[in-house]
Image (cartoon, rainbow over all chains, first blue to last red; front, side, top):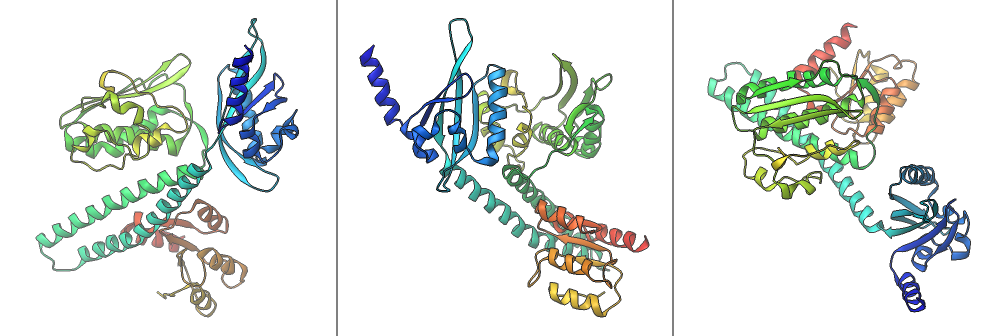
Length: 333
Length: 95
């Protein structure tokens, strides 16, 4: 036992991650060297409630709330937050914690880790800043093209052919603008600037309004689209704008990736105290191996890349947040 | 219709001319749209002129701020057709 203890002691000391141990009230009993390096305080200073002082003031309340809800629900705590050292150094962390229990199942303390993710965070930030800058820069000349084409169309005496060229050019400009706008939405989402306003919204009505907007596309491809279960459903507490975007993304993807004259079925129903909004289509489906990556930014499954259509791979990403979107079924249709 | 090449010229024109409606960009040489808006609101002569913002920048914070300063609308140029812009302008001038 002593040998095993000694090994663990050395392992804890050498580990590049921060490790901490607290009692059941969250008073710190132990932190390793890695933790002290990231937090910028000594192990003695971390004792008791001292370790909470290492957490950035702006994150403290959120972390504490997440910690409490996780432990109350008996889940593992996992979150991203910052340390703010006395010297003013900011370190981004991915922190986890699990409850330790005695034989009777009572919580005796918590054991947790903290991994330095500062570099990743900085890279993410740079990427987001770039996307946001690039979208603004791209939109300016695109608006110019779009408006001048609109003026060109109004010129008197232009031929039918010329008119159709201008029309095609305008549609292309509009498609490009839409792609750029999709990129902008992604970058905003990442910077946490997207504000959410929760309201009680009837999902059936919201879905119908999206379908109205998309009906020309449905007709164009000759799909058969049905919507069921809209009656007798209580309103959902959601952000109208975001929920609308989620539904729009899911439905327009179904339209886009289903070969002409396909079937698209949307069902709304209750399930174990929740509302369930589901969509199924007779399209190519999503390969099983692509499912874990589905919510990644810009990810498009291999079989989607062989289809001739445009997409930034943003649809599912927007769907993931703030509430989970579930996928199931064979081939993930 | 008068055009100003930057924010400073816009403010100069707003003092010397009788203006019914201002179409304002955000990212301009010399003065940012927000600064122009603040200056317009600070002057007695220009305080009540309706301002419609047209920009390809859509920083949420800027949008919120300029709307709070009393802009009648914030339109992203790339998402707008001239037809829609014309309709909007006519509607504001009617009111």
